[in-house]
Length: 406
View 1: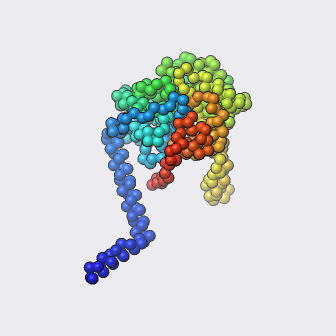
View 2: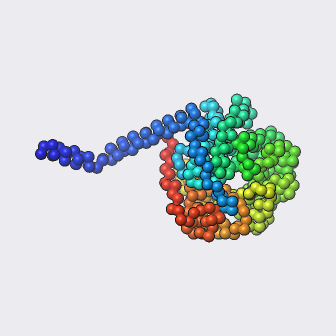
View 3: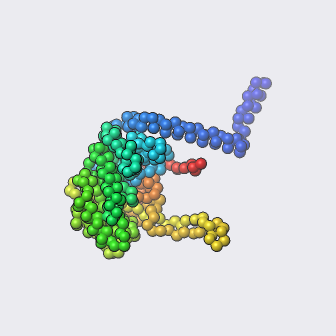
């Protein structure tokens, strides 16, 4: 009886609810364990960055249907915490393209698991590779030639269409020759990466016209001059020009195409924001798609405008006190997720056109996965066009919790 009583007391004690202090302690322990595991994983990545490539699943995926359009997203993965898009360490820590290659291999694995077949890589995968004052980084693409070949083979095994979108600092129409030459050097480096990966002609470098400097026609003419006289054939083979939201419209971009032959990528949201010529939406997209070379499927960019009102904290200059200001949305801002009804309406309007679509919503892969669910639910007539199965359970990228930086 005594033993039974002791067992009963122990069982009762085990079922006793934890105090708030005990719960907090367990949460701290769990968080510490997660941080230690993440630190160990990161150290393994830095020690052997190619491990992710070597350990990847090299089984070929099911071929993408020839008549299906691809949906893609840019750079950052939100659906799986811990995936990095590039080696972002400062130059004092000697970052390297080789580390970025390991990160990309992990991202490619994520894309495979979610059957995402189009992805824009970070333009910073080769850190400081063209920095004029840091020549020690200039040879990293050459040093990673074999690793890039393997990464490209992995991308083809997973049937992923890749691209770069060099930063806003890439300006080919500047009247500052040093800035123009720096921009060209960056384009050369990214074209060399795509070539080293063995990417086909569908892998592109997307850029904007650059600065208007108060005179859009002159800005376009300077861009044309740079393209025709300074760019290498390697860069020209990859380069794509995009209309933007505040400086150069679709009409400007098409005028440059007529003088250079550079293919053009149409941005849906930018066209709404910057279209002083009042060009119609779908016919203008049709003109953009016709700029692409035969045998290469065009692509376009799509996003919806951000509509949320933001609450901003700032100091009142008169009183010196902090106050809350309600900031209405700026329509050039991207929404976190695509409005399914606006998106579906547009997709139905372009069913006669062939174009892959890069989604530029801020929720990245989560937005893409949500859109596929929305198409399956609200527009089953479009499912086959984007290779979305109707008889499969809805995808769920689960909730993502980002820990605040300490």
